[in-house]
Image (tube, rainbow, N blue to C red; front, side):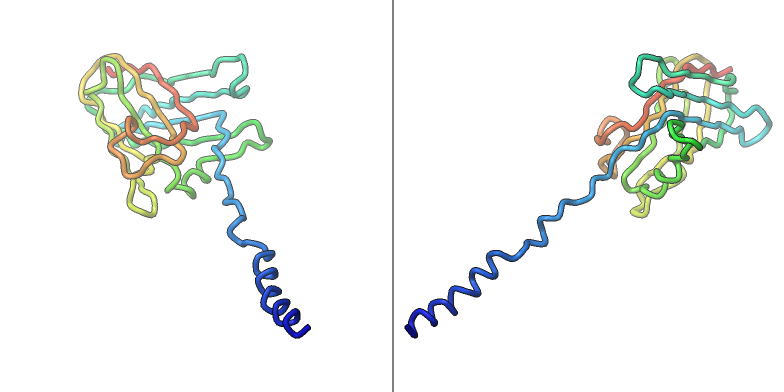
Length: 186
């Protein structure tokens, strides 16, 4: 009888420990991609006037309607432009400013400006803001036009890119929004 009590006392702690809840089973929260219906890029010349606004608006998301894309005017050759971007979710009322969330989660985002076409080598881009680790965020930037011509500017917001990176081609991550605008530099 004493042996049974001893065996029970030896086995009981093993049973209790093996049945305890494992704290490590809690799943990590998922950081979902943002819903962005509207992207507005503002290019303000450092000297002079003539702010240029580039906007894409896609209120039905992946629905059947194409995004509305607009460019307010031509860029001027030899001009430095201060650039900024605003992201909105206009499926909500009032519209939610997603830019604040992107900047708060700077280590999980990166904004890219990519010149293409006939102006690919004739537009310089310098990113002005960084995340807490010193890696590029890019929602504030400077753009410099170096020659006249026609081409494109593609603006891309990546979610959870690899940082640091050498550009969009090796950034990885998921694209939150990407739009290509036809541009003229006069």
